[in-house]
Length: 150
View 1 (tube, rainbow, N blue to C red):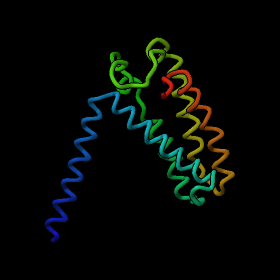
View 2: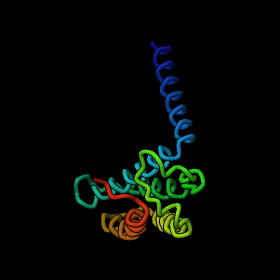
View 3: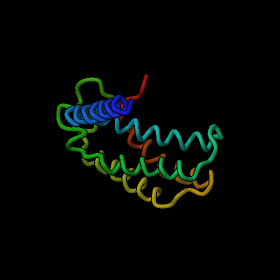
View 4: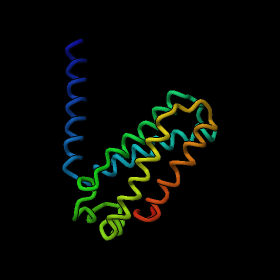
């Protein structure tokens, strides 16, 4: 029984490493996975604000940390290299035609999210304040550099 469990865990870990390695070779998939993680973290905070899930200071801190860590890890060269505007992507061509503007928008998200992750929210009001800071940085980038979802 222990051998089967160990084998199952090993297979799970290998599959996880393999998908990470695959993503690193595919910039579209890499950035989509990163943005989904950021969106999921923000979504969990929004659910707390709406009362759909109970306030949980540790979970809120973890979500803010995820946003900051994932945003900080975005490297323009590897996430948005030339030619990665082709394929199944919602990235606008503006990313490549206005790289300085895109870098500035990303830097804003990185700065704001890092600042908000420094202090653990102690209430729903604290989460609202964090979202009021992070939200515009997300929206600015989405409005300017991402195709609208249909």
